[in-house]
Length: 153
Image 1 (cartoon, rainbow, N blue to C red):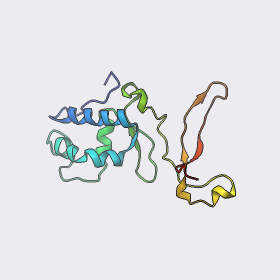
Image 2: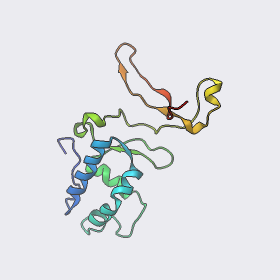
Image 3: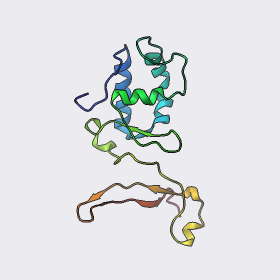
Image 4: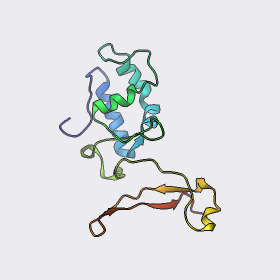
């Protein structure tokens, strides 16, 4: 993993192809919640990695955190845990495309309201915390802002 790109940990048949597909998806779409990636790739993980006797995973195990642990062993970047056991996953910086650079891994967008009374009268699902990560040498601070998910106000 000297190049910064994730690579097969167990070196079992099909694992490198699975890693490549996950890396390409994350490079294109940016960081994603592990559960979303698991929904897309867990079937292949179970067939290629979990079912292989050369790996240490329980053949009949499910929802035991193996997929997330395997992502870490392969070199994916996993963010801090939130909401119990959720976390974001992304390709390390050396393997990410510029288009997929969403800033540092952090907590998810949080629902809520903020602003004047007119804004507060709207449904809480209409407003979301939007991470707009930008660093300014002048202010030496990270910025973020509240924004509306709807544009028809």
